[in-house]
Length: 242
Image 1 (cartoon, one colour):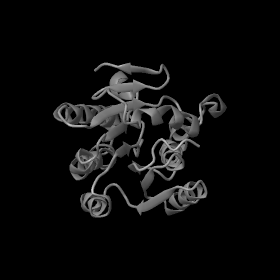
Image 2 (tube, one colour; image 1 turned 60 degrees about the vertical axis):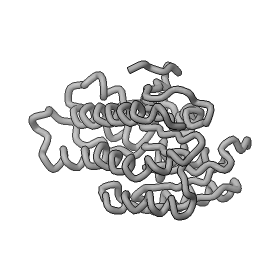
Image 3 (cartoon, helix red, strand yellow; image 1 turned 90 degrees about the horizontal axis):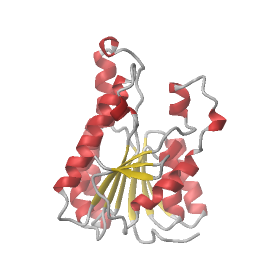
């Protein structure tokens, strides 16, 4: 395995399953020290076993993204140990209910926006100084086609992902004079538990697996990436200009 992320420190959210698990695993196998954040301890431990068996290193952070005070402390803890952060992958997300806008309960709306939007904003606040200390800070936010299509009944995804896109692009524009590159990626339909929940009648064997998708997204985290404030469409393999 080529160690092209040797010496890089990478934080991946939602790292206990799906695309986040595979991105974290592949980063670790290729030399990065992976800070893996997720709620599911068992999934994090499995990830740790896989990365360590490949000679890599991890730091496990079992944490609910709605523990905002803990997200604030996370940046300080990373600084104390490494003084910097090279890679931030904002993968964690919540589907919520598929429902007409007017039928969404305030509790469901607030829960999805807390995980998909507010937590990412808190992470930006916590991690921005660390990414600025890197010689090539890279941030990648996973988005969805629903951010732009505004598909009926997918309002929670559309609203929250559109907010994430606006937030990431604003941060990118504010960081043009730094070494940071901040982008978004739409991974497209993927064989994950979240997809199965949203599309229960879909034939999952027709979809790419998370490891395949993660391999396509990993190059977006390399120091030689020059794009910033843009969206990468994995299915077409093209950058989309906002």
